[in-house]
Length: 262
Image (cartoon, rainbow, N blue to C red; front, top):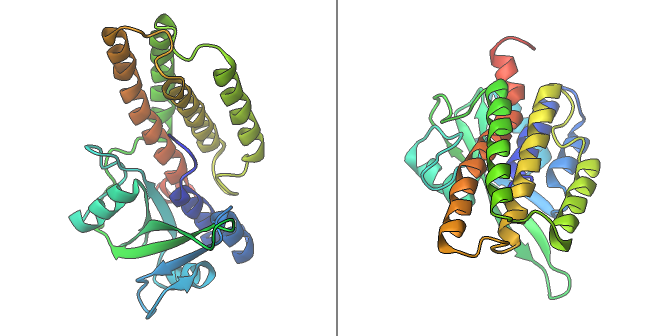
C-alpha cells in the first residue's frame, strides 16, 4: 500500500524535465529506478515502442507541458477522466500518468524477463487517448493535508483501542525500514515541486506505513469478529484518503502551472 508508483516517478521527473530543471539522462535514470528498462508503445508519430528519452521528447513536441498521476481503485476512479477504455486499463494497473497539454495517458505494464537467477523487470508504457476533463476526486494540497491529519488521528485511536500493530518486532522493523526509505527518497518528487507537496507525500507515506503494519501483523489484539471488522472499517477510509493525498502531491506541479504560479 502506497509504495512509490511508477506513474509517480514518471510524472515527477517528467515534469522536472519538461520544465528544464533536470537533464534527460537524469530524468530517465530516476524514472527507471531499479527496473531494467522502460519503453513507450502507441505514441503518436512512432511506429513501435521507443525508449523513454525519445518518448519524452516526442511528448514535448506533441504539446505536453506536464504530467498528472491517477491511482484508481475499484469504485474509486481517482485521478481519471475517461474514456472508459482508458479507465479500465488504468484500474487494472492501479495507476496511470495523464498528460497535460495533449489528450494522452500512459499506463504501465510490468514484465519479468531473463533466466532463473537473473530475472529483471521491464516496463512498457501504453500510450492511449484520454478525455480532456478535470480528474476525478483529486483534492488540493491543503485539503489533502487536513484530511490526512484527521484520518491519521482517527485510525490511530481505533487501532490503539484494538491493540493492532501497536508494538512488537514486526512493527518496529517496519518503522525502521520506513525511516531508511525516507532518508534515501528525499528527491522522490524531483526538483521544482513546492515544499508543501513534499510534506503531504511524506505524511501519506507515513499513513501508508501504519496501514501496512496493521495488515501485515495479522489481527493483533483484535481477536473477535467485531473487532476485526472495526479495524477494517477504520483502515478503508484512511487508505482512500492517503491515496488522494498522494495524487495531490504528485499533481501539485501541474496544478500550480494551471493557476499561473509558474
